[in-house]
Length: 206
Image (cartoon, rainbow, N blue to C red):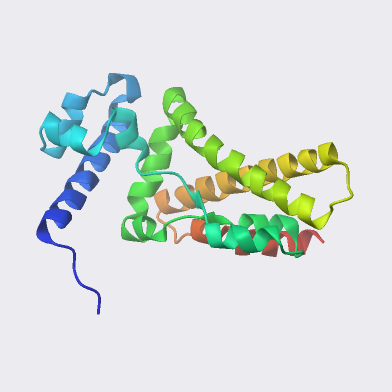
């Protein structure tokens, strides 16, 4: 049986959630440029000091916690494996399912809010760019290990192409999942199972 978090930790988590929810709702209602930190604080019933203890900027409150990350253990196994490249690379992407399961509607509204602002979309793309660069480097290591005699520049192109394909898959899954939740439907695509979804799709494509 897991030990519940201490009261101070629970309070911090609750305030973080309240700030995020307020920021997301206000952006949807008024547009990103019209929303201020003061407005977010008023809606979330917190002080500016509390806001900045949790988030450095208003865009961070809308976008939320860090982006998907790379499963380091899976990456080490992937580099020395010889299984399907694209499916194996997709399974390196780790998404915390906890927040999605706790409040799937909020996640859908977050995606909607980010989509209303070019500034927020650019910020999100900056965060994802770091993940894509790391993923490309891991894929390239795998290709060099598996095909040591192949031209290095050719392998680099293959690694970059694979990364772009995965980025498209991630965007599609996230957007589709959000639309389903907002429509009140049960999600048909689980963002935490990108590898399985991609595997099934590729199998159908032959």
